[in-house]
Figure (cartoon, rainbow over the protein chains, first blue to last red):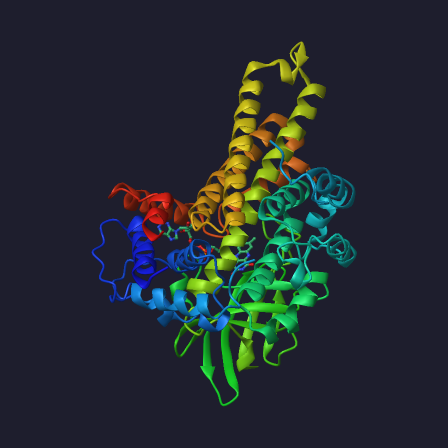
Length: 87
Length: 391
Ligand SMILES: Cc1cc2nc3c(=O)[nH]c(=O)nc-3n(C[C@H](O)[C@H](O)[C@H](O)COP(=O)(O)OP(=O)(O)OC[C@H]3O[C@@H](n4cnc5c(N)ncnc54)[C@H](O)[C@@H]3O)c2cc1C
């Protein structure tokens, strides 16, 4: 899966939940103020189920979820670390 | 439609038999005495029910979430106080397993799985309930960790828990901490004579210069509420939704039995149409609530993010249905439903709590409506369309 494919899947998930949003891939979704407290968890669930991986606990920092780009980088790091793939 | 996988040792029949022999006959006593005996907690642990949310590698029974929901429904049918204990313990076990470091998991999961360490969830404060952003408890950094100061109130199982999952404001934002009961500076004050779930052993906790090591921090600093709290509350909300279905089931069973026995006019109550109307509403609320819970549980098993909102909807519906069922159940029983020790009176008091905890009905209405507005603002791409694009 290419970075662009990962990015577009994440963007689609966010826009699926917030259709009116105009979102750049490097924009801080938390700073935009639309994210409610449930959405961080939905994002984690989406990333894990869609990309079939388990995000290691040390990767669970706010910065990894701030932007579409950051989330895509997190997916790539986790997927290549080899230990994270779901059984 | 079957509830539990055919190959699983955990079936509704097994849960029901346990609830009927070990819990239901004593529920009035738990309510009166305002406590759940340690022996019952041990039996729940021995059955694998306390650690039910944990996978086998964490010492749990590896129950799927639909089955977990059926367990909480059956225990909730027998006694909401016991179900409340399972709820908060499961929330803590889930959080440690999901967000804990290897060290935290090794320290706490064996005890949480076998019941030698009971967990409690500590978010609410005297000045902050629904609006968790108002939490005043602080966790200041010290050389070796954090110092926690503040008060937590209405903490289920707070009287007996061994480990508290505590939310406090740290330098980088709201954070979650695992606090051992033996930590100096922590005082536990029992809360007595609450209206419902009277056996749930509530406490107020006072943290005064409570020093915890940096290994007490659960999950990333600053994501205590958005990740650890939200994840744990999702499990708690699911448990309360299923427990509410259990209350409705108990009401239906009590009313079916009572209306067959009690005669009014020339016929048993069950022959009167106005009574049948109440019963039919009760059954419809019960069945619909159970289906919403089943859906939320199945989405959890699939790891589908839609489970978060499905759980809100299930809890909102099932808790209001339980209050309505319990109110009608008291009505159908007349004075005998109102008297001391009446089971339906207990269901009524217990059901009311379900509309307040794990997100009150009003907060659920706000959240569900907000979601509806977002969904209506534009087409939500289907999962398959998204998948289409990445392949
Ligand atoms: C039996 C019991 C067990 C509990 N166990 C625990 C536990 O284990 N751990 C824990 O942390 N807490 C626990 N709680 C506390 C519980 O989570 C809170 O009571 C709940 O979050 C509501 O907060 P509150 O009571 O402060 O009410 P408030 O937040 O003060 O709300 C009061 C009323 O106003 C409504 N309201 C609030 N905000 C809005 C709004 N924006 N718009 C419209 N209406 C609104 C509410 O729905 C409610 O009807 C328990 C409570 C009870 C009764």
